[in-house]
Image: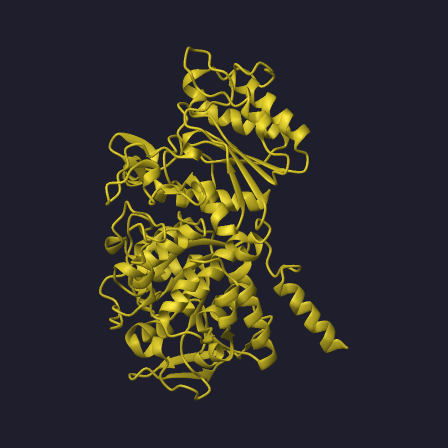
Length: 565
């Protein structure tokens, strides 16, 4: 009976009904993404932890060099709506010798039939010349609370060794060791083998000197997740085959890593599992000291004053860990089931309908004749509602029109007015209704005051629309997007304020928590980076509307908002 109750308690912890920690854990994640696919699995877990409120991702660094691991990481960041996470790269690191066959390169180069990248990423940066991970880590550590950061290493130790030996810089007067001692709570690392299963584990064998430096000089506790631990926990191929939407970056990485079907040991995922959720499923060794020999063999010597431990796990707990890892990776996909089969109605202007008037594809086709921007089967442009609906099997009714306004213009412009006719055409069976207005309104009418009921002001138009929609569509989930690219900031602020009055959820694209992607004129962001991103994501030299890549990025942000309604 006691064992049964203990199992129930553990399961309740793993399903989120019990919290192991108060508040978010600040995490720096260091990965050799592109070597083994379990790094991609661990990354997917990390984003889910962030979305669940368990971690703050301070930075992600790469211990595998080259352009493609950085591009692959950027793709994952964008897919999971965490594109503002600082990325650190490495130069002169371990040479792995598998650049031509790694999955990171495969998905970075994966193209759609239309000749466009299959996965959105930041097209305005050079992924081969990102800041060094050590610089990114020092900057992140300085901002963190003392003795709070959990550092997780799932690859080589080069960046940790370099961080240890780093000197004072523009971020801190402290040397690396002192900065670590002040800011880091613990280091959890996938490395070594302590039961004789593998004398020379890969990460250590490939980076012996860095691991010797780490074990000799690192000033906080180090917890080792050894080779034999990850070998017990298998990621099931059934999850890859049935648990994700088509074209998910994790499934594409998995399929490009080796011939299907196969289950994969979870060396890196169990490392992160322990770092975030603690020792619930694990057995910690006694304190001791790990030493690394010149040939890369690892040895643990018990010592009550030592700063090192290593982890082990029973077979039963290994199966529970596998289920937890799968649930974290599939979490967004399970949430998307709530959208499947539902009717999504979108109302707005050209930033929702799409305006590609000067776009000409490689075959000379433009506008609706081009399969790169218009889907004839769906009969719509490839804007953010299209990507959301296509990914989730939704029915899309895109009522947005170029040049549309929410209310009546106060000048002589001939904009389509939503409150005049379109408002009454919203289908009765709408499950989700999204509004995104403000750009044209900001040029052709006045803001007014929150109590206005006259639709010739912006506030008055919103009062008219929201009161009508809430009354006539009581079962629909309603959301409003405070649009990017309004003429003045007060228009976006008016949208946020009116939504608060009607208790309608609002996604403020100029607000905190929404990463910069295109045309967010008032968002605090370096102007040089804004200019580069706007250049990469607008339609053309004469057309300032967002292109298909910008809409792909926005679709993940808006889909996350939809799930919260």
